[in-house]
Image (cartoon, rainbow, N blue to C red; front, side, top):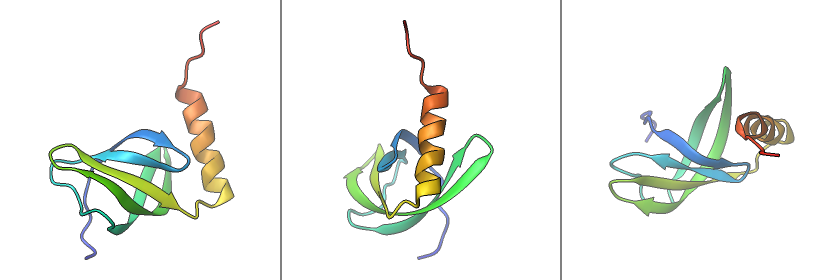
Length: 84
């Protein structure tokens, strides 16, 4: 199936994320995910590793290219506040 599905990515890491959606994809589904980080869009492959009806899906990214991994790290660093 090639139909686009929108969801809100939360709990992001270099290895994956949780995507909030009311009707989740089935466990084991392989997908292509477009992830917007500020003005940059990353296109990644992933697999549904966790499925919670009414909440969303846990996605594990597969073979994240080093430049994309660095973009994710920099984005996470930019939104993280460290208290001194």
